[in-house]
Length: 261
Image (tube, rainbow, N blue to C red; front, side):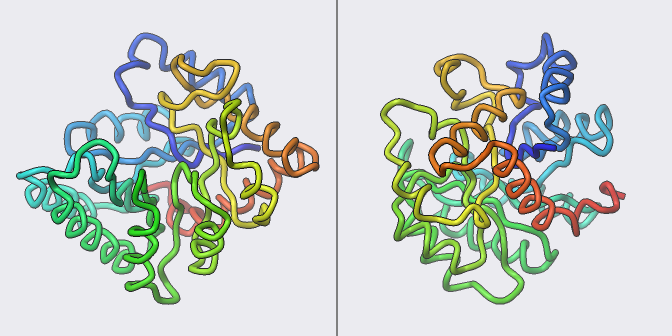
């Protein structure tokens, strides 16, 4: 069994063939799909997937750093309202993004800090977006770390030193299609860090692995990530699947055991 720990399957790019896409993923061995929130504009579509695929799709709640703008406090209030109403698999995706736009950095930091607090309050994992901001995300999480804070640095693409800092805090590294790219420089990090600290993800519909790079990504491609990780680490794909699935189950199961009851 494979677990896609991060996929935006509610995205409009799946509107015409979502059911077929889900069946392709299930046939490929992917049994669970964790859906990161972006902002209030996707909440209804995300929650509908939980209804359509019970026991397979699990929503998160949070505010993506790229959705942090002048109205970010209103967005946080909407997210918090949902957290007060029902359970979610995780807080996220949250974090910092210094790649696309630095206009609202101060607000991003504030929103991220609030959501770190939610993860601790509701005792659920924290799923972190850290594009061009991994050191800053590590520092912020470290300042708030205690025995109860856990989660994933999604789409990790940093150094061995950053990976070690993250895993020392008890967080997992989200490993996706980037590792299949010809220009990927993640081999050294992947060899140096234990598989016990990794979970698999697609980030669908983004970052499709080779040979589908540049096309729409989907969860059925997750075995390609497992196979490439196995090749890099010199172990079997079955072993990668076993360990990363166990890691994801350990991280998420306490919050999804009731199937979002």
